[in-house]
Length: 493
Image (cartoon, rainbow, N blue to C red):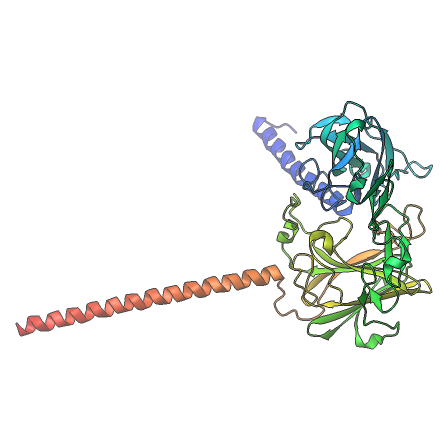
């Protein structure tokens, strides 16, 4: 077939349009599946320490994360052990480099990408720390950027995590233990809220005595906190400081509505105790963490703008994990750790307090028996934490998950990636739309606010139009009256 110049231009234009359409679709497909989950632990990541800051969804050299209050002091000329949390072992390597605010690389701390693993297999990129000798000639405030590849999604697909640091010479260095301890030579005596030789690790407890009758349990993986309180029946909270009305493992399932998943291996039971309070129960055949979350089905992209100081995603599309109000529970025997979490995006859920909210649980309890975990909780149907909590009453997008077991990379009860239902033999997560209660309008809170605003504007306009009509009619009537009077006078004259 022969084409003239006009035909070639038309074909080129068609190919260009096709390519421009296909490439974004491919990227969206990758975004939907990829889960690198990486964030710096030391030096600590920038504000919010989110771990799903990929090149295609986020903006700027640090994934849109703002500079926080923490600036870590690092001594030039010494060896520093950089550490990070890795939620999923994508094939590919990592690199560490120093950059400025514009993202210009000032110095590479590694020679390109490093690929080392935790197993002797070809897909073994599990390394989560690296010791590096810092040159003597580096001084001043810098940004450390960790870049992690996900080569199974493309050669240029990477995730970022940044930390703010200041390099000083040894003669000018004062060990401040990162503000969470007292220096003792080259090490630190840390507050109970932190541990490590530089008090670099966050923890909720140091010993059982910090847990008000609970147990202080170490987290064996890379997630923070390094230690957390597990509470007995009758108490809950970060330090088991709250009294729970749930004191028994016995409940009547006929009092609850039930949503069942993967053949009944994961169940969510719920009921309304009264108009203001709901109670939920998670029953899952796992000894790992369990989680459920919800957001109004008709939520708009505006929820992605929270927190306000974080740049929103470049992808104008909602994912099931976006803007989710989440409850996560873990149990060991009759002791449990249960909290109120939030996900801004596909990052590992963070407790509401991280975003300036609060834990809204009214009561909680959990236990683990015969390979099954049960988590019970009560919370308000509607919370005044409008940014980190969602109403449990309208048509919702509901998500559920539990941790992976039997793999070296995933430790017991460690909050890491929960699995791919399309690839893994054991399904450990999913989503579903359903209505737990009142669904008359089918509108989200944003939609209801918009509807109320529009109704107010329409009412105001209606009143204005009515006033104009009344004024117009008054003037018209006056004009007609004067005309009649004039005619009568003319007749009389």
